[in-house]
Length: 181
Image 1 (cartoon, helix red, strand yellow):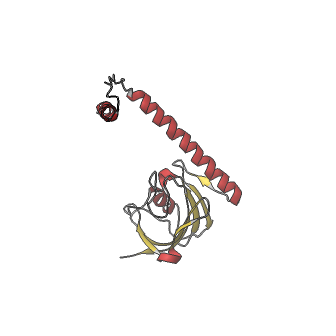
Image 2 (image 1 turned 135 degrees about the horizontal axis):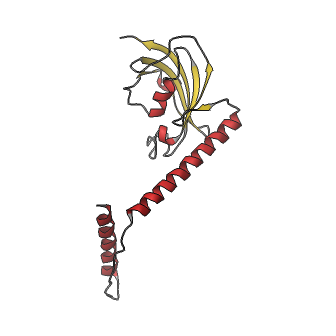
Image 3 (image 1 turned 180 degrees about the horizontal axis):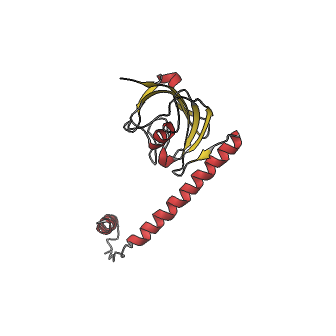
């Protein structure tokens, strides 16, 4: 399917160019065979490169801030800087959090200081995967910071508002309480 689309696209462009040519030359075009494996390999190499660059940026940021963060197997960086012995959060809990979301350059994106505390149902919140993983590491009353690479945050497109595409996000979170309904 992709091969046919590429061939059709290229052929359409060639027809447009040929029709606009003032000399009225006849253009003959022999489409090249598109190699799906080559495209796949290029995408894999590009993704690996981007993941490496994201990791380097995050590590450099953490070093500058002198934070003591740990990275999960999924790539979430975390540091719980105010710990409690309270109940650990689990999927299904509805929690109220205060939060602050910044870019690595320090630009503030969102904050509960501006919008109020947020209620989140863990496991079914529809929130970004990094936030779900972050909250499941916490207990009621704890405060923590997390850094989410783009694939755990808003991805390639961003939120089309305050978070640009392919942005790593710094979350500062306080779990205020578990909400019982």
